[in-house]
Image (cartoon, rainbow, N blue to C red; front, top):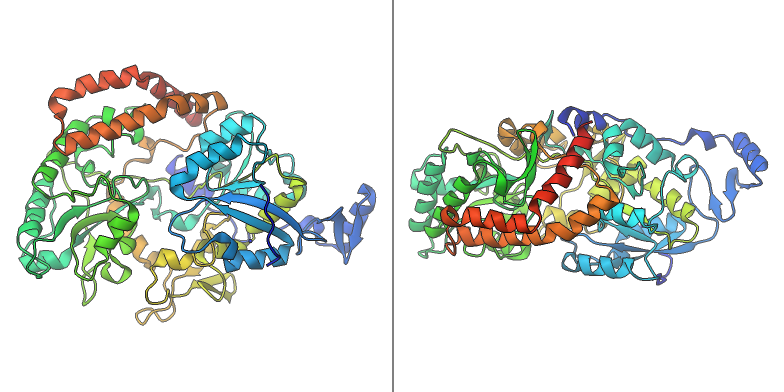
Length: 575
């Protein structure tokens, strides 16, 4: 599988500590002196060329190209929201030319990942690299079976940047290694994705149409009962003034595991973060949300919202494109929604901290439940382990080690995450960078992914995050800092109610045996929970009379064994 193309690219305290690292991604000082390089080459039987050490076709140390003569490799990759094939992305074409390492990308749709992954790893013709496809469990399974290349064997000689980054970020390394200490995957830690920080990491926002509230003379809801009243008014009183009852009081995307589902909005007021398959720590034990205190009350509340016509009938079946298309229509129809910031769901000009001529949607702070509980998910993220692996099909894997290590250089990391220089970003000098405003007709995510997939290895340290400025705007002609950004300000609304970091299930890597057992057990359990949960909410079942029987069914699907595995891995992590 190697088609050719023409030459043309936790604990909260511990997680916070992992990102206190220097911005340059690590420098290789051992090859900076020509005489030292020449002496090392002579001792090892290597040669020198233009002051650089040459090992066969591969240049060692810093500098480009990586190879004397161009070489070709293949990569299977998956990512979402892309408009462009990776083979046509300008940043990757430029990287091909600069490095001499030409990559042929096999782009896999998210809906086909599992099938394509299984087929590729079962064949004799695996891609040389796999990016953003393998899970942590896959890493343990396939790494332990000899299909993936161990990175430690190449670290000292070929990957100085990766080595330094891991040394500066011990939590990244801890989360990246298998239980037997093996490192197979390249991580992509990103301090910019920790919002707002200090132990509180907010992924999901809930946004309410404040203009509709004002139009109807309603106060911002504070309790679950208040929300019922507000959503009912949105349903009945034509707040978008088009003479139609087309308002959708509350919409979300149930299948979205990132930021678009109702796991906080509906469940949080009852002291649990859903949906039912979500796992966390309660009273020192690993539980799924369906097992947790408050779950039945949350489902009963969701059932009422649905029965009263306050939840979008498509919320449990729609995909991202449908969810966003409805919300981005010229006439607003959503009263309440979930998303990262809501820009993809309703458009970037309609969201803000307060209403204006264009801004309609503002953050709704977490609601208070019947017992006074307010809870929001603490989504410890930014570690981004195992973004890319090198398979044992790759010839001369040391070439790819040098190639990937270059991605951790600061400018390369910035461009991978925020887009190519002079397109999506610009280099200001003095260790600073700035985004470029997306053109009219592009949402922010599509604009960033015009030149890069945003999923290959990279490293955005704390210092780099602070030195990356947002686009210049009339309101901020010099650009905004991270703390000025809308996402940061949104996150501050929810952070006071975030789950304690000690209750968040850590990013622990399973052993090969654990991963294989989970792979056998988990899909049946997850599918059963999702199916039953939707039935209970959409009035096709009754949780009050069916819950105990359903939990016995899950026991028969080996739920107790699954939780035993999770608990053992959790205890291994905290020790």
